[in-house]
Amino acid sequence: MRPAALVTGSAKGIGRRLLLALAEDGFDVVVHFRGSEAEAHEVASEAQGLGVEAEVVQADVTVEEQAQALVDRAVARFGRLDVVVNNVGNYHKGPLADLDAAAWHAMMDSNLNATFYVCQRALPALRPSRRGRIVNV
Image 1 (tube, rainbow, N blue to C red):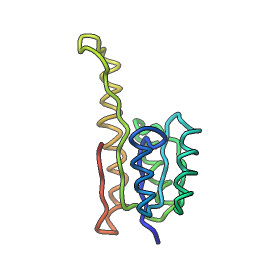
Image 2 (cartoon, helix red, strand yellow):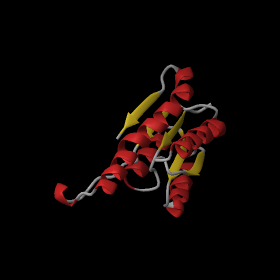
Image 3 (cartoon, helix red, strand yellow):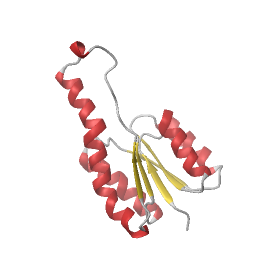
Image 4 (cartoon, rainbow, N blue to C red):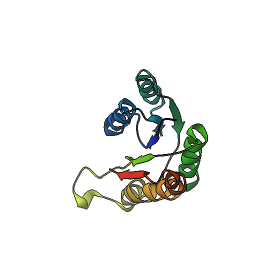
């Protein structure tokens, strides 16, 4: 049985590169996306071309129930998790004076709450291997 990895935000950018690196190392992978469905399926096809299995899952990980469902689906598909990479996050690209409360809360949701929700649900699936790892980008 190959090890399994979940990378949040893995349809594009850094998440995509991290997921494909794990696939190159022989990990079955869960490709997570919120809105980039076409890109997620492209990444999954690329990972499968490397000889591993890939599952594509849509979720808004800033919503606790959706983050939990993402992890549950990963475990249901592969029976385990060995690596979780929390890659989802956003930031304000401008002066602090231009940052409003809604944007601040959105940053906290994606950078902190989403990470907490995914980690909390993933821990039981990571424990059995005694080598499970969580990487927060």
